[in-house]
Image 1 (cartoon, one colour):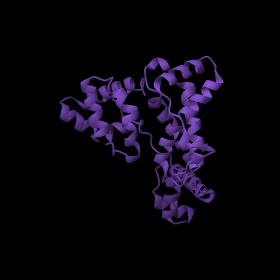
Image 2 (cartoon, helix red, strand yellow; image 1 turned 180 degrees about the vertical axis):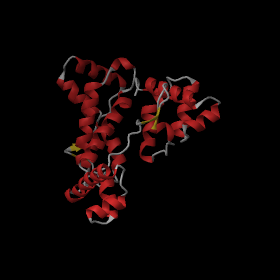
Image 3 (cartoon, rainbow, N blue to C red; image 1 turned 90 degrees about the vertical axis):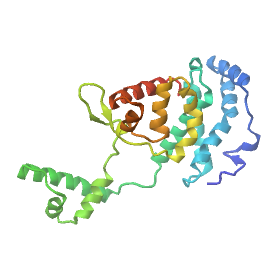
Image 4 (cartoon, rainbow, N blue to C red; image 1 turned 30 degrees about the horizontal axis):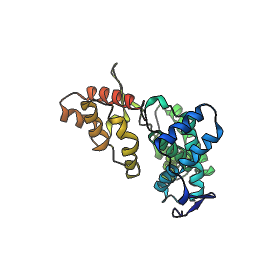
Length: 257
């Protein structure tokens, strides 16, 4: 992907304007009144934001023009949904929207697809598993399923893995009548390098809204990659308390991100 291009989708990126805060406010006031020309000017004045985002996807093998168009859709959605009463910079709100739109595009256009034959094998294996369970009153092993179907067990494992949905980070793993513990509570953050650049844009402002203990917990959890149990030991409180404080802090931050 040629990210060094001066012209993308007919837009000369070297001549894109930069709007100051006063200009943005005036234009947005007009947008709220239904001024279409002001909306177009606001979009054009924020295209550099789209360019900065697509730079992060330069190693995905996609054409810059395609990602630019998708990013512009995210930008327009951000403009249409932006709430000026939240006292948040437009860029802070828009960047995650643009990223989300690009990721949806990359996901939906992923060249890796589960083949029809692979799906058929997986579904046959599931039916065979159910039949053997009913017949023997116990769940069969992969070897037993493979023997019944007359194919190698490796093929069955591969087929079943291919159709599995990813586990949600918000899947509950334990609940004792109080706050549930989720998958995300039990794992460390590996500091995905593709995400770290966004912290200074979208999270820094929201973090300022938290109290010191909340800041410390989120810093240990998501910037230093500690589990809730490790955070609890370091701070001197229970894991359940860490979980509650973390959820409260994240809920509070969502108002500003």
